[in-house]
Image (cartoon, rainbow, N blue to C red; front, side, top):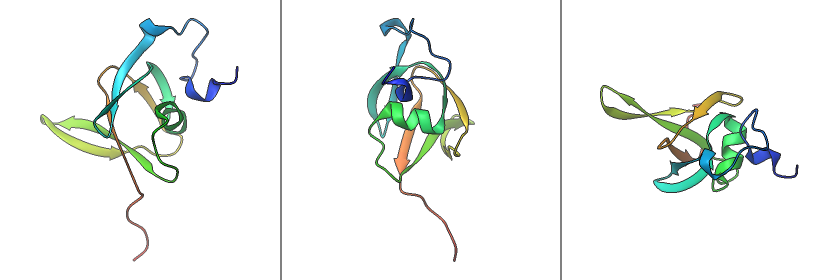
Length: 94
């Protein structure tokens, strides 16, 4: 299948609209298949992450949003309402 890069890990041909969830990238809604992704397959599924950018997931700590950068090859279970932020890599050698 030509579009395998945009499907979650383990997705099969039964993935239909009822398996799609709305997630947010930089506050904009995107519909993707729910399920397990690696960082790379999630970036491909979201389609609007500029080349060279990294992806943060917005998590809650004590009710407050906290950004956590997704690492290369990291596995993530995507569900309805998840929030992501893309940005240029930060840090590096001083």
